[in-house]
Image (cartoon, rainbow, N blue to C red; front, side, top):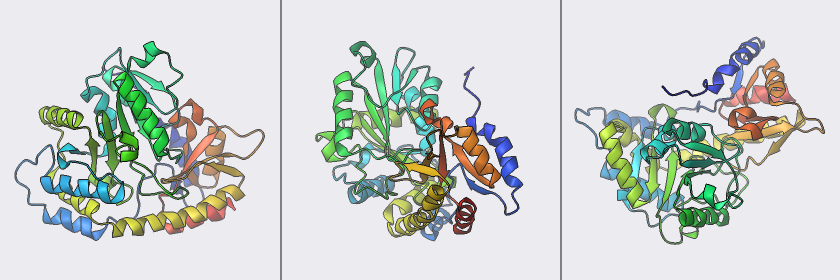
Length: 368
């Protein structure tokens, strides 16, 4: 039996109750789940594919993989991706959680992930029985430790911080990983939502790869940019050997994206217009919420891209994470506790942009 910690969001129960007492209702800026409608072009593609009596392919329909390869070339600066080296996944979280297991990692192996990070990177290592190591810099590790590192998770733009890694840092991590024989998996699901940076490079970008995708995986979800979280539609792409092995293992395990969802994902990555509309909605909400937080005494750090504002109290003696969560709940606003993302998140909160215009306006009014 796995001995995993209790799911952290259960700790929010008393703050949800407190926020619910606010006379103008709750503004939930905690989880970050999309609230805007799923675009009609995607809904129609799902409906048109609803007659699906046979089993779908684990590797994904050829049309889907070709559409994803075209999207990588068009939107992510990756012109040389073979559609054979693409794998649809049932949302990105399941791949994050199961990748160490699917790679065959065990007790002597180390999975590295950022110090402030989405907690599923650590949980994936624990599910596999591997060792988890939170570290932003690997060059300081001794060679014996480095030799045991088998998977390096990168996350750019980062959740919860919104920090973006440039091509030079990504290339440095790739070179190190290849020297020690580790896989690099880059979680890039917020890449279309950039605000204060000129570019958000992919791990598969030629500036990063040195001309080879060997040992590299880009992990992507359209949940945020296409309001598709309920469809569980994501994909991984990159190294030919890794993708082939994952496809084979997932065939044995029955890990298959349903055919109608494959059709919907094909539509989502083939249409850029709806992404632009959604990006503008989040830009508008961010422009309202960020100055309101600063007016309320918060310092917003990084937050160059993505759906979150990473905040601490702008004070010589800043409050703790849970004090900030309490203060926000008293205003009827729910936020994500920074400590959910690692010990280095103490003193921070994560504020999501995923609420309606009306709720964002209400939150801004309460803060100012």
